Image (cartoon, rainbow, N blue to C red; front, side):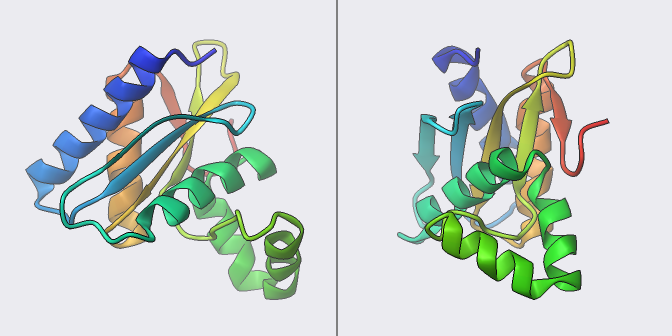
Length: 144
């Protein structure tokens, strides 16, 4: 289970990292393991589509069982398959870094973070920081 208090903590710490690095304004979505939104924040100046992108990064990570960095790499190798995934998921999968699985102490997936607003690599940096500083492990690719 991913409590609301921890989801909010992940978001706040991810945004602190973004401000420390002077990244563009971000939108951060935290989903539970079932793909349900637990918490969301959008910084002033983040575009209106950022929620959909952040949610899609997190949801796609949960749906495939690995972080969106891995999904991005697979999209480069097999764009047709990723197109099919996008269709069958109703457009909810976003193959760009910034979707990161949240793992508990037993390496069980308890949720995912999706961030959008800067380039994917920077979004991912913030997601990992928020997750790890909250006491969880982060999986940007296939959990090991």
